[in-house]
Image (cartoon, rainbow, N blue to C red; front, side, top):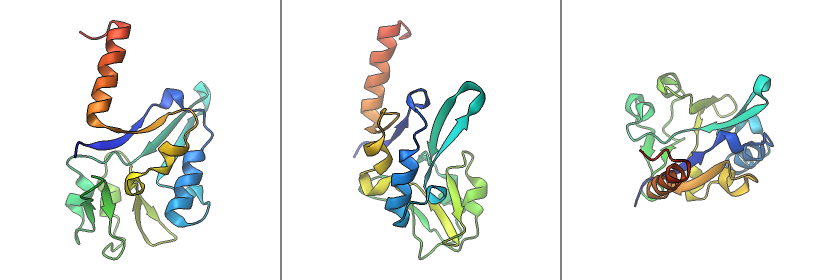
Length: 155
């Protein structure tokens, strides 16, 4: 299976935060944006928004530092998933993620991160501006090549 991930284009985000609402509902069973695995940050001075979540790294430091190996790649989706039954809540993974893509849930007493909703990410499905898309690595390469040829930036 080719690598599949969320492609986020902040310039398309309108700040509606529907991604946070639907993510929290799917992950927590209630609308609790503070517990969502995606966060929209606002850059007020520029009136811009930027959704952010786990980048599903190919060499994940979060998984490498976990003392109980609670973070592993899911075979069918390729997402890094936290096994909540194994997680100790030690937060080593939170400290080591260079991007801030994994958080600690005070409600659960464990870490939380994007698991790509089992291959059907709610944030991408609900995003009204397509700022968040679920794509394969090959599709992203094709789109970038196409955009580069349109703008003359292909060389």
